[in-house]
Amino acid sequence: MRIDLLVHAYPPDSLGGTELYTQRLAEGLRARGYVVRVLTYAPERRVSTRPAGVKEVGVPGAPDVRRLTFSLDDTDNPLRDEYDNPRVARYLRALWADERPDIVHVTHCGYLSSAPLQVAAELGIPTVVTLTDLWALCPVGTLLRHDGSLCAGPRQLGACARCVAHMGPRGQRFAHLADALPVWAFGAAADLAELPLLGRARYARWLHALRQRSTIIRERMVTARALLSPSRFQIAMLERNGYPTGAIRWMPHGIPAPETLRRGTTCHAPTMRLGYIGPLAPHKGAHLPLEAFVRLGAGTQATLTYWGTLPGMGNSATEVYGRALLEHIRHTPGAAHRGPFDNQEIARVLDEIDVLIVPSLWYENTPTIIYEALAHGTPVLGSDQGGVKELVELYAGGWLYPRGDVTALTERLRSLLADPASVQRVAEGIRPVPDMADHIAEVAAIYEQELHGR
Image (tube, rainbow, N blue to C red; front, side):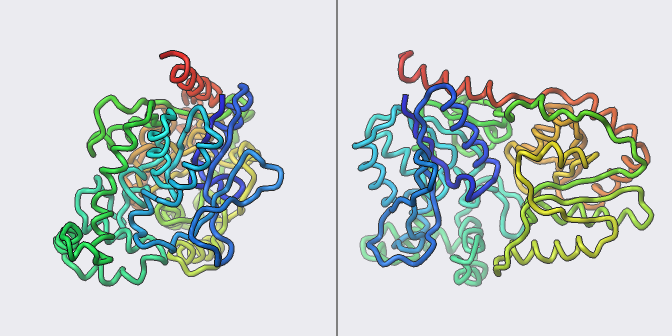
């Protein structure tokens, strides 16, 4: 059976949770005898003078990974191409006419857009979709507005337009205009695109495309033979935004061989070791552990250690935020940043943490690091939203505090420091997390049913 896995990014170029999930899924399916090909996006390394289109980038030693590159700016409607890219559609029609897979499995539509679902439906190729974040509702994938507030879904075109303008450098030239316009004006401008003459206006077409985004994506998503979500929270969010009740199947994926991560011994040192693992990014709330740690005051019997990728030297808001936070960490007694590490070393890293802080400000789906920490026997102190809340409660894995509330986070840390035995009690009561092998077996069963069970 030939399986095409489609994802927005893939290791080693990117090492996020979705990318690692897709890599593990590919490896597990190959181990079961499937012929797996990964199709993913690769940024253009230099300005191309060739005609607009999709080109393949070779990867030495990885013939079963095809990295597709194309200019994100070479388009007459970037808001449409973000979710419905005609160049990707043309490429896949030609590829699948020549090398037709038995199943197309999409684990993230970013960059490649939802066009693969449309092309697969046209060609009669069964599709499976794993919803790894909220991209179907939000171009950012987080439902976190640019002002830091949470969003319940794409119900106000003006709010969506403002967030898109603040997403990155490509939209910055529109940010001031988007902020200045009243919310109702965006809808009125989008209406112009439906008029015969004014429909050619560039910005009106862009806004019209943005207004259609969630509807078109939903129509394509529900053509899949199976829609899978690792969290119940995400299912509820999508159903509140128009997805048919019962159309999405809850299927937590877990991690490979979770029993091998189990902590051998428990540290009983007088100093409690707090940790944060992940990028120094605003939506991750990476600043909150440090702010709470500083509030604990001098002489506190605790340390705070960060692990993860270091910020780049660019001028994006995330990189500027990350560099400022890194400087603050370096000048805070008792705090340190150890830098990146290979995922194979996660057990060693977790051995140095008594409590993992997961302070996300957005609706996380199912963070892999929480699965890993709980399998290791490391309790989690997380924000009370989305998949963080769901995993902590489902596996009795720790404590929650109100999202973004540094005062509440500080007080929770104080209570743990006053009663360190409570950390050990929670660690001993953590429930087993899912094994990725079981998830892969379930996915394979779906494939077999679609091709042979009808």
